[in-house]
Length: 443
Image (tube, rainbow, N blue to C red):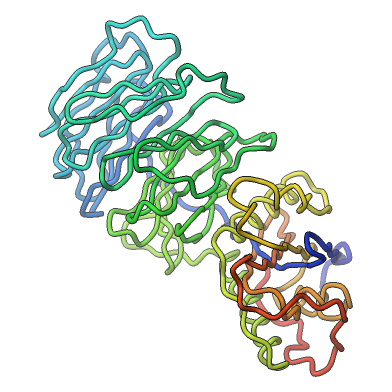
C-alpha cells in the first residue's frame, strides 16, 4: 500500500536571449558528526596539510584534535578577554594559531607569535585569520574589512574605509600568499593583491549569511558556506554537495589539502568532507549523498536523451550547479515553487559577460530521478530546455526535505564563447523518448 502524496509539480522558465536552461543543486541528507571537546560552540577549524586530520576550536579556546591531529594546547583554562573566533594551521601541520575577536593571538606547536591587535582599540572585532603559505606570518580581518598583517604577511588592501552593505565574515589567502579575498555575510567578494574575482553570492538578501570561504589549489576558484550549510562554488571550484540538514550552524569551510574537495564544520563539532566519491562524515567512512546521486542520475538521463537526438552533451558547470543548488535549497526551506529572476542573475557579477542565456526547469514531489525526467520530457516547454541545441552547459540541484519531498532545479546555460549552434525556438517532438521510466533514486 502506498501513502497518498501531493501530486508532483513541474514548471519552466525562459530567459535572456530567449533561452531556457537546466541545473541541479546538490544537497545531502544529514551527516554524522564528530564531537568537539568542551561545551562551548565551535568557532573555527583547520585541516592538517597532509589531510590526515583536523582541529576544532571552541569560543572558549578549547581545541580538539581529530584523526592524526594531536591536541597541541588551547586556552580553555585561561581567562580570555574576548572569545576565540578562528584558527589557522602552520605549513608543517604541527602547530596552529588561535585568534580572539580582539585580535589576541595564541600560538601552539611550531606556530610562532608574530604580533596581534590585542592591545589596539579596534573599530570592529576580528572575525577571521589566514596564514601565509610559508607559515611565517598571518593576516587578521575585522568585520569592517580592516586587515592587519604580521610576520611575512604583506598588506595588499582592505575595505576598512569603505561603506559595506554587510559585514565581512571570512577571508582566504591565495596559494602564492601574494593576495587574499574577503567575503561579506551576503556573499560579496573583495579581492586584493593577486587574488582574482571569480564570482560572488552578493546582490541579494540572505537569511543564511556566509560564514566561511576557501580557495582552490590553483587560486582560480573558491567555495563559500552559509550558516545553513549551503556550499556555493565559483571559478574552477568543483561542487560536490552541501550540508543543509545540520543540527547547528556551519562555522567554516576548508579546502582539503590535496585539492580533492572541501570540508565543512558546524558549531556542534559536526564535520563533513566532500569529494567526488561522496560525503565523508567520519574517519574511514564514505557516505554517498542521496541528493548527489539523484542529481547525477538526472544529469545522465538528460545527456542520454540528447544523444538519442544527435545533440552534443551538456557539460557540468560548477557555477550553474551552485546557482541551482542555492535555489533548490531555498524552495525546499520556504515550501515555495517559483522561478528565480534569471534576468537579474545574468546581470550579476560572475554571470554578466560570461553567459549569453540562462534557463530553468523546476519540479517537486515525492518522486524519483526518472519521474522528474519523465515530467520534464512530457512537457513541451521543459523538453525544449532539455533538448535545446544552443545550450552548452548545465547544473542540477536536488534538495530533500525532512518529509522525503524532492525539489529539483535545472539551470542550463549558453556561454558567450560557445561553439554551440544558435538558440532554436522550435519545440522538439517527444519521440524518440529514450528514458521513459519513473525508476531511479528518490529522497
